[in-house]
Amino acid sequence: MISFDEVRETNEMIEHENLDVRTITLGISLLDCITDDLDKLKKNIYDKITTVGKNLVSTGEAIEKEYGIPIVNKRISVTPIALVGGSACKSPEDFAELARTLDAAAHTTGVNFIGGYSALVNKGTTKADDMLMRSIPEALATTENICSSINLGATKTGINMDAVELMGHIVKQTAEKTANYDSIGCAKLVVFCNAPDDNPFMAGAFHGVTEADAIINVGVSGPGVVKSVLSHCHDMSFGDLAETIKKTAFKITRVGQLVALEASKRLGIPFGIVDLSLAPTPAIGDSIADIFKEMGLEEAGAPGTTAALAMLNDQVKKGGVMASSYVGGLSGAFIPVSEDQGMINAAECGALTIEKLEAMTCVCSVGLDMIAIPGDTSDATISGIIADELAIGMVNQKTTAVRLIPVIGKGVGETVEFGGLLGHAPIMPVNKFGCEEFIKRGGRIPAPIHSFKN
Image 1: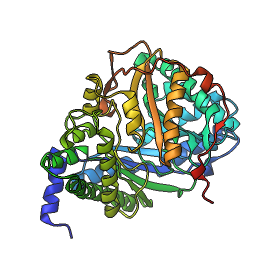
Image 2: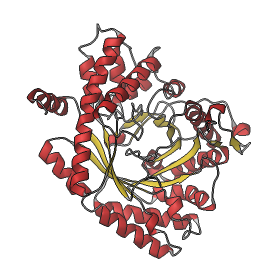
Image 3: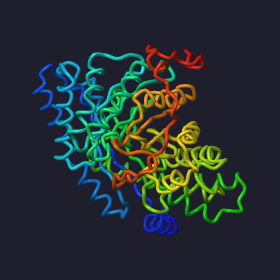
Image 4: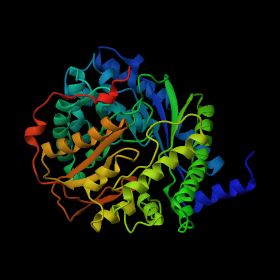
């Protein structure tokens, strides 16, 4: 039974500490839509998404109203479109047509985003994969609600460096195609190593081929709650601090579990997982960086930041797995720059650099996320940053990702404004030394020795 004190405590978290359910994401398999006729494929995709997803938004809103729990986003993820469109699409433009079909379905269902404009190329690239990747700039420039992700590496397979080189070009082209909107297309494009099949968060969500025909996944939030609790713990030892974070993560995850089960029951769709990630927002006080300050760091990026993040991430997972039997996705602590006011402040005052962020990604939930860089950054430099981050994921057997935004026409010292949950960010400097010869070698970086476990 839930006690009165627990109800009161949860209400306090919602009203004063920015606790919310960040997203209900409905995963939909499109494998049964496959045909070699492009027009028929577009109709199949639109019909399935709008049929299966027709009640997602209204159900989420009803749960919000009934339980008083904010549910910020209602989203859909689909089977990687490179797999779905391989038979019907003969050109990158054909794939872009599928993106516009997905966008139309998003508008009809009323969801915030559809994820799954994706390809999985960690070991090699098919003709369909290549066409989808080359279509991304056009697809993201001509749609509003589409998110794209490409998995370029894995611990078991190594890193596909040919695809890494191509994605450096694609990121830059996407920035140029959406230059009139501060290159916002790149905010909806992420590259992965070890991408999970059940991630509810954008821009990386897709519906894995091992999943059921439809599934409900939920992502929770809660940095503001953790910050508030730690504001009363300045004299605690690390052991006591860890215990406090773990107990707080349990409470946060129980809210997500409640919403996930309720949505599953009302929609008649199986419950998949709760993603335990602490997802910050630009709201004051809802920041991972502010948690570091409560731990005793002057700013995010100060010596000790990686250790603080490692402990935070670990205790969030330990508390979360006690609150739900089914956890997955990314699960940990996000450290995006533009979406976290504390991280923005740290970057602006010089405490936080891309190099320090890269070190932090060894222990965080994902990787280099929502980082604005100068618009004249070379394609090869973007590929080099991607390769470095994927190597961390490959060797450490964890998910890592890169979402860089080269803002065309802007440089270091300027700011880019995206609005909403995407926030704003200072343009951060990148290393000026070149890596063109390294990136052009091509081929595949082999998997590490510890990947061989059979």
